[in-house]
Length: 233
Image (cartoon, rainbow, N blue to C red; front, side):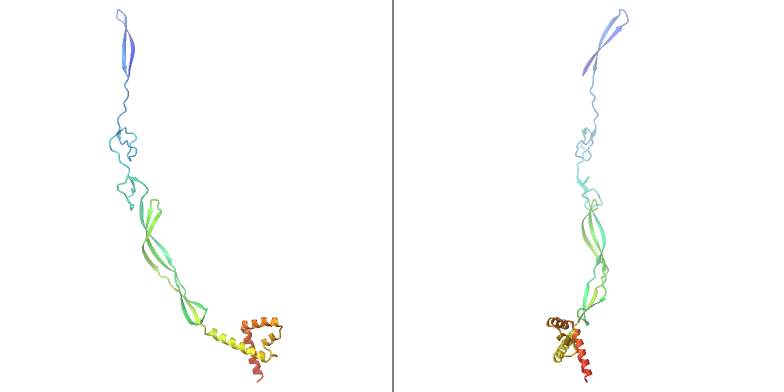
């Protein structure tokens, strides 16, 4: 853009005169300097100050950039938190003991006795664990297993002998037969059954049931019968 300015000069030498000089000023627009660099905003080396692209832009490639990761991507220039790391850990686990039963004919049925007390064992298991970039476990796979302490089985003896019960049952039945026989034959006797016979019908029924179920009354009556036999000899 051009601008004109009039400058007045006064000539001092005679004859005096005024001289008008027109000065034209040229206004020059300031041109910014050229700055070369990457002008692509999506590039990883984008230069915000550059105004002239120099072809140096590097495209963004996402991936794992940690060389210690198992999925390291040598081509990646932008980390996307996808790195995975492998680690081995060893854990101790309990081996629970087993319980075994042994028959013992010298023991009555229903009777049990601990012959050997069980003891838990231990084993060490090594796992290959995959972790993400935050340390969170993604997966694990068993690598090895070593038993460091064997479990000791618990052995319990259980009775199988029912001979005593059979003998007691037979003796009880025999005592019942003998007691009832003598009570019926001698209604004025001193047996427990004789006393039951003298009760009212309703009471005697309950007493008879009690007499049979409790076993001991029958043995008492047999004992009384034997004593009576001895006295009358």
